[in-house]
View 1 (spheres, rainbow, N blue to C red):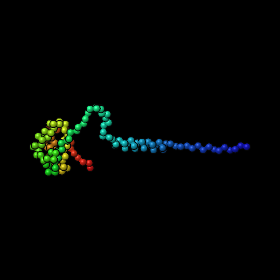
View 2 (view 1 turned 180 degrees about the vertical axis):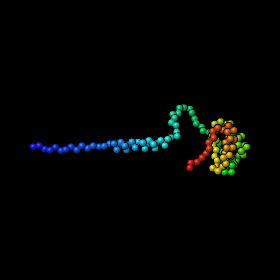
View 3 (view 1 turned 135 degrees about the vertical axis):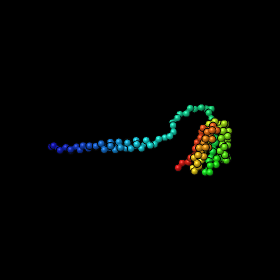
View 4 (view 1 turned 30 degrees about the vertical axis):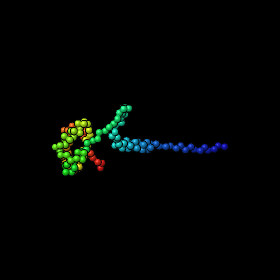
Length: 132
């Protein structure tokens, strides 16, 4: 007696569409990942057992809407700003100077104050802003 054998069903999986989808996802993630970057530099700093860090307290200069200059909370005329800042910078040459200006202050007044700070020997000037 002869039995008819089962016909074998061969399943064929077409992977071409799968490869297309994988490549599309790869391209998508490659394109979107180029917009993400870190702004930090990865450094390995040297170690020292006797080192101590004492950051200098920064000098704060503020200019209000009317153009009045405040040095650490005290009103100072533009003509005396250079001598007052020079005394502070003489003690610590790399002393940071934080310049806070009202958003509506004239740019010319801001530039005059920055010039006076630079003339006093200040080279580490930072403009204070706030996030949007």
